[in-house]
Length: 293
Length: 303
Image 1 (spheres, rainbow over the protein chains, first blue to last red):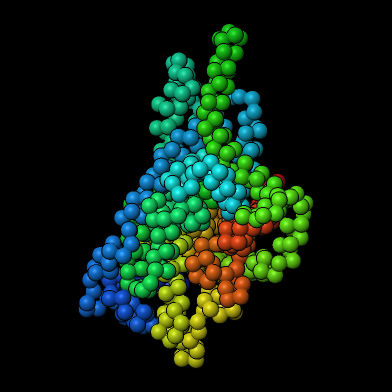
Image 2 (image 1 turned 90 degrees about the vertical axis):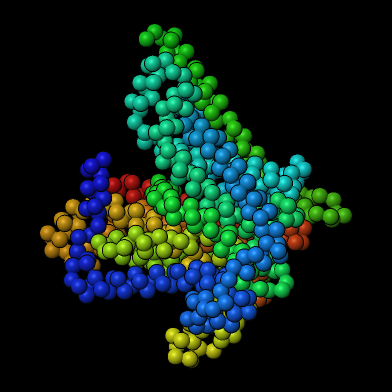
C-alpha cells in the first residue's frame, strides 16, 4: 500500500511548476478553460433565478452570470405549477433505484461465479459476456420495444427497469474486481466449513465495497440521463422520468427559459450533490471502466 | 482430503455457479440477445406496422433500400464527420487538461471537479440548455461571445437552423459534455506512470518535449486507446442532442444513423427498415471494437 502511494506521488512529472512563468501560464490556462467549462452551468443557475424575459435578453453579456435585482425562486415554483415535476422526479428515483438495487446482486453473483468458482462452461460464459458487451443499446432498442410491447409491458415502471437489471458492463466490472481480491480470505472461510454462498456474502461482499460503489455510480449516472428508451415506451407523464420531462417541458408553450432552467437545476441537483460528496468514487468508477477495458 | 470429498465440493461449487449466473444469464438473454437476433431477422423482412401487405422475407432488399436512401447516407456521413472531428479535438483537449492538472499546483482537485461536472449532466438537459446558448440574434450567448472575440466582425447566425452550422454546434455541445470523462481517465493513467521513468529520462538529458514523446505518450497508450475508442463509438450513438436540438435538420444536415433508425421504425412504422439501420450501426460499432482489441493486443505483445 505504502509503496503504491509513494509511486503515485512520484507519477507527477517533476519538472513543470519550476520556473514562475511556466507556473503562471499553467494557472492562467487552467483557469481560462475552467471558466469555459463552468460558464454554461453558471448561466443555467443564474438564469433559473431571473424573471423569464431577462434570461434571453441578458444572455449576451456578463449580466448572464449575475442575477442582479429581482432574483427569486419564482421559476422554481412555476415549474411545479406547469408540469408534474414531483411525479417525474419520483419516477426517475424509483426507476433508477430499482435498476441499481436489483442489478447489484444479480451482476455481482454472476461476476463472482465467473471470477472464482470452478464450473464447466465458465470460459464460454465469460466470452459471451464480453461479446454481449459490444452490443450497444441503440442497436436493439427497436426490436426490444416490439418484444416488450408484445409482452404487454408498455407505459410502466417494469418496462423501464427490467431490461437493465442484468448488465454486461457491471458483470465485467465485478468480475475484474473479484479476480484481484486475495484468495486467502475465501480459502480460510471455506476451510472453516462455510459454503459458497456464505463465503460470498460474509467474506467477499464486505471486501468489495469499492466495486459496489463504482458499479452503483456508473449505473446510476447512466440511467439518470436515459432518454431514448422512455421516449419509446412511455405515453404520458405518469411513469415518465426527468430526461423526457425536460424535453417535453421545453416544447410546451409558452417558451419560458427561466422555468426551463429551474427544471434543469432541480433535475441535475441530486446527481451533482451525490457527485460532490462521493467524488472519489465517481472518479474511481469512471476511471475503472476506462483502465480495465 | 479424500477424492470423493473433493469431488463433492467441486459439484457444490459448480451448482452454486449455475445458480449465481442464472438471473444474469436470463436477463442478458431475454433483453439483449433475443432482441439482437430479432433485429437481424426483422431486417430481412418487409415488416411494417399497419401495412395491409403480407409479411415477406425480402433478403437484403432493406439494406439495398437504406443504402440508396439519401437521408441515411447523409446520416452515415454525419456520424463519420462527427467522429473524425470530435474524437481528435476532444482527446487533445482532455489530454491537455489532464497534463495541466497532473502538475503540482494548488487547487488542482477543485479544477478537476469543475472539468468533470458536465459529465454528470443528462444529455437531454445539456441539449436544452445549449439551444438557449445558441439562440439566434446578437443577444444569443454564443453569438455575442463570437462577436466579442472578433471585435464585432461576427454576424449573428441561427446556428441550429443553418445547414453548415447545425452539426458543428451539436459537436461542440458533445465536446463540452464529454471532455471531462476523457480527462479523468487520462489523468488516472498519467498518475500511474512511475516517476523513475521521468528521472531516468532527465538523467539521459531529455527535455520536456522528449519526455512527453518518449515517456508520457507510450506509457499512456492504453488509456488513450480506450478514450479514443469509447468516443468513436459514442459518436455513432448520437441521438438525444439531435432529437432535441435540430430534429436532424435543416434538410438532414445534422441527422444521425440512430435518429434515422428511430424515425423509420417509430414515426413511419417501417420496422424492418429501422432494424436494418440498427444492424448497420451495430456493424460499425463492432468494427471500431475490433480495432480497439487489436491495438490493445499489440500492446500486450510488445510489452
